[in-house]
Image (tube, rainbow, N blue to C red):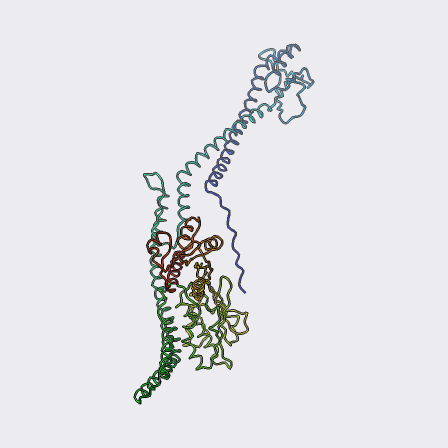
Length: 620
């Protein structure tokens, strides 16, 4: 059992400058707090000491006078002393008791605010002693109790603490921002350049692209060392990429040569398999030619003047020569190099015929029935394709079908076709039982084959796949059929309408019939004015127009078309008289001027030249 792989969730990104600012504030706050704590603890102790000293001064300065007043029982003076002490700051209450502890007098700083018990109150006692003579022992007269508050000290400490904290906070904030600005200037700004460079750096690039940090400094530092390290690493990567590129190029060349060799071997093997059939296909017609030639030779030697028989034999020989020519031409088309082939207009029937010329005899010799209707109109459809490469695809599919059914009891191959407005579908069906589901995804992979060792290269279907892909189409195993079927989807060549303009109906019909045989759609008009109306209403690509017509001729049509503000059709003018020179017609806007009687191949050539030029422009 495979262990489940758990990937850590990506961590949230937090800029370094934020981390620095946070760290500076935290550290500064902690240090400031420690300093503040000890500072104000010291200040608090100092203020308490001052309060004690203050009480001691009161004792030193007032004790003698108050003792004298108590001895003389001068209560009024004693009250005055007590009141004067009570007025002092931080003194809450002053009491005087006699020797027995009874209250003699007292005074409050503010009796309404006085509380009997408070954590902020401190009570200090000092005795009242009096001696009448210096030699006498002092007599105890009572005590003076001074109650002081530390509330004012606390309030003062709190006020100073609040001011100090605000000041320290502002100082910390300003210092933090100053440090951050300095860090950004010397570190973050350079790190951002490094990050931007690294993120944009292509590890597989073979171009030399080194890190260059924009900074003003006359000395080297850690950033300079980092820059040098990154550039040394890039240099090594560049060197490794060059080595890798060279190795890949060498490997690609080897693979290309091996693939080309394998494809060529596959093609040669296929051609070799057909060699017997081709020889038979050529030898049989040669036998016919040889025999009929000897017959005519004997007739001449014996003086037998039979013109009908001579004509019949001659026609048979010519037909046989054409048959041999078709076989040889098909073989040339299949076997020649198609790597430099250009797209061109081709009729699908012609491509299939070239392939079947090479396969039919082989199929006959092995009792393989071939079902193909060459007269079906669908095979007259036009494609803008690479004919040689497409014929190689058809040959691959037919050979694969032959190999698959060679040993079966029922041996047949069908070629069927269907189309819609845009696509043509070619179906190559054979009597096989189909491709197993487990290998359907592999059959188009290079070097994958189900054939015996030495019989197949495994490149046929992969080569077919690449060729069809190059055409902008598709090739796939079609499971809609009971038997084995491979379907090719090819883009039909879009044929726009050609407008034929002539007041002679026979000429119009003759030109239209010829164009239709070439796969074009035609529209007819009997005058230039009628043609102009059709062009405004329909999409016309080419116009073949007579110059002279009663209701507006070809020149009239050319002149009027130039007034239309849109893409115009190409106009081929035809004439039976020297009404205008070719150069003048072209200057007026015509594509060309042709003389009657018309050479239709010339018209078709002009149309195909424009179509091919347009296709090349679109591909670029």
